[in-house]
Image 1 (cartoon, rainbow, N blue to C red):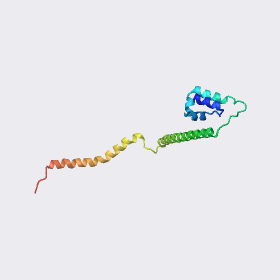
Image 2 (cartoon, rainbow, N blue to C red):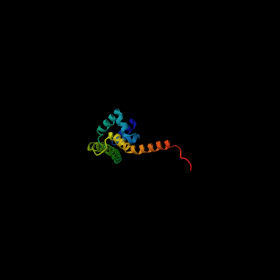
Image 3 (spheres, one colour):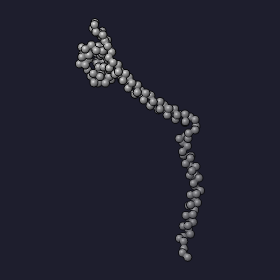
Image 4 (cartoon, one colour):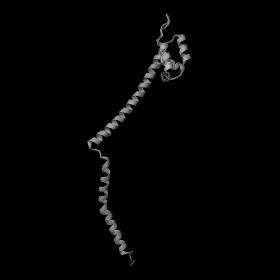
Length: 142
């Protein structure tokens, strides 16, 4: 990275984080993670250009900055959609519980009891039939 920075300084090209990262074939985040490198880049970028030479922002560096910004924007937009969906689900669940429209979690037990109580007479009848058939014994042939 330092060699790339030195080469850019020698040529007098514009010094940008994106341009240096591209030239060194590293991500911009690499530079930002290494404080000493980013400080060196900023210092070199802030150093006045020698008289007679003008610093020019290259079209390629602007396109790189734009592409990086668009990629970041896409990632952030996806994250916002994800967070909005989670928030919507949380608020929806909370509103549903508070509205009283949804079944409370403890309603399952009483509902099962009602179903069993409704089936109870039928099951008692079946049990009585079995008792009667056992008491009568096996059917006799004619």
